[in-house]
Image (cartoon, rainbow, N blue to C red; front, side, top):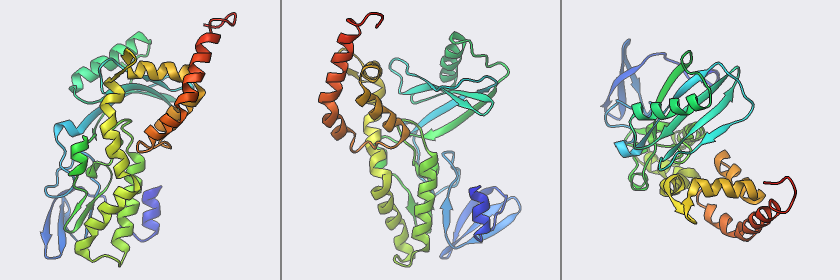
Length: 295
């Protein structure tokens, strides 16, 4: 749909893979299997597996996570999320039209081990994967230090989406940031307010104001959210307990995973709701032991 809208707006769609590019004066020459294409400016949207030298962010092993899973011919109406001990990631079961997406994403483990853990989970829940369609993706998941040196633009080019490392380090969500960064890049390119050599810096500043600082904060929180401990239990365990017993905390976590609660203001909202959340939890705990039939 977005591609069709771009074409209607005047974009020329070339269904060709760019295999290399080189600087030519103030512009670029892009090599495809069909020949060469000239361009004044490059917007790099290659995804995380960018093989074009000199453009896009530089991802190290610690700046990536793997996501893999199966599309299986089963149905359910709810979403399942499973956290694993000392694992910076999670397993999901997402309903789709006529089938389920069952997958795992995380950092620090090879694909073979992620697949084993996912298949163990599916076996325990009776979800068959033998006839399913397997998928696998590499996702950016920048550390906080890497956010501070992230290359989102340079002389004659801007990076968008995964090619610029613009993915939520906690949830692995990248679609919104790909679309939004493309929007911001187009605004910079079409604006006469910045000279060509100033556009990369202007784009970087727009990303920081819009969402990049929030993703950097998410990178600082990610490992603590998945692997940290609080009140003698893991953070995911306590989160689930608070969500069961506190409507305020449940609403906060729903907003966080839906993307409507950002990381920069998360601490402030937690502190503001702490008294109410604690009261909800205590009352729920007490009532579950005094109301017949409640556990």
